[in-house]
Image (cartoon, rainbow, N blue to C red):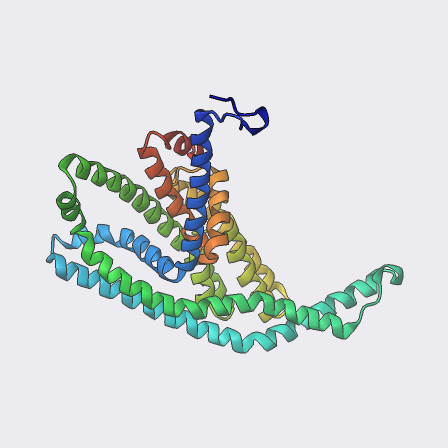
Length: 358
């Protein structure tokens, strides 16, 4: 038998080189498919995941109510009250947003007036060589556009929140109805050993999420209520809207505190006369945020999250890029669940330990 010529022979590929390449290709394909599906299914998944988080908050109260009333009555009470609160709060916030939308032209005019005042103050104290000349009309248009760029996203997000609150309330009713049946269905679907393993993992997830959410809700309320009272005491309009915004933004680490402070304080400077009152509002709201960050949250939260700061920032960037503000709200709970699940398997346990704190 003749030997093939040297130029027709292909280089041999080691079998050890194939599995890593296949694994990388499969991982890239799975990540791409997951990203596409998460983006396309966002209108369905976002309210469902928020409803799941609310269900975690309500399930301990469901267990307590079952000692007094039957399970269906307990679920009906919790689901009805929760859905009513969500929808009522959505209507209240939407009404505030409508008022904010009507105030937008006045806010733009006020911002232009403040800018002209600051420009006049600088012109009186800075030599003309440093003051420079600018087109006044162009500057006014730019300032008005900047105010609109800040206020419009708040208006649009709150307008969408009413519809999403109704969907979340509907999901929440069915989740509470199905929660008590989950263990029995798992035991029916799997072998006893496998069912015990799944329920043990679900129990770890439940404990971690409930611990984090209970602590975070308390800390957010202890921040939002004083902020709302300060704004109300100084007659800042839409104090309820800013209090709700502060409560929700407190669930977004790092970035949320900046937004929750900047928007109401900036609005106070635009609405109130430029005297001691907006300065007092800024100082008191800053005191509320500093007290929450340095005293309340460390005391209540402790190590409830168990994630490294770098991992939290990475999850904020990922979920924020994927789902916007709702993704940033869900970033920490979803990452906590992912770390617990990864820690359950030997192949991914080192990664879970790597991103955990302590």
